[in-house]
Image (tube, rainbow, N blue to C red):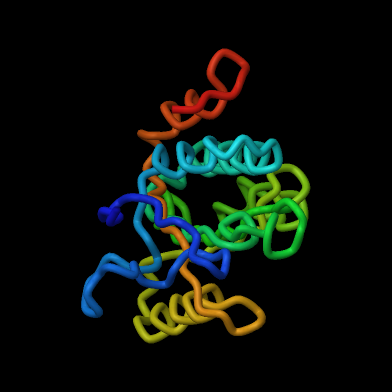
Length: 197
């Protein structure tokens, strides 16, 4: 069965997301980073019956809630790391965290300094890792130096499109828009329990 745009691709035989959909033509834009809505992502991993993955998804939802509370609602996130690999097979262990780069537009009335001063814990890398299980990085969109923007986004793409052993792989893009977060949280934790559709 062919995956449709906006659906979560399955792991390939190497235990990673394919960098391009195997059935898509070479010039198709339906390739990594795969653009998904938040509900699709949560449904996909929630169906795996893995407590470790559920815990990481809960951390991701709490991380997003903190971003939204700080006014960070315009932009997108790239998701990667062991969470998006079949590490249970590849390395005989559960995933430990999720790697996230949040590409965002500054909230109205803020520059980078004022946003960081008002929300110091949100940009504390160590705290985000321990509190939310997120290996989190940030990138402000709209920088007037276009070459810098291209260079930095290319950096993250090149870092995340390959495993350390050089294997080419895919990753996921999720919009920062908070409109789907309530529904995604309800799927993840309905009435205090796990739910699978």
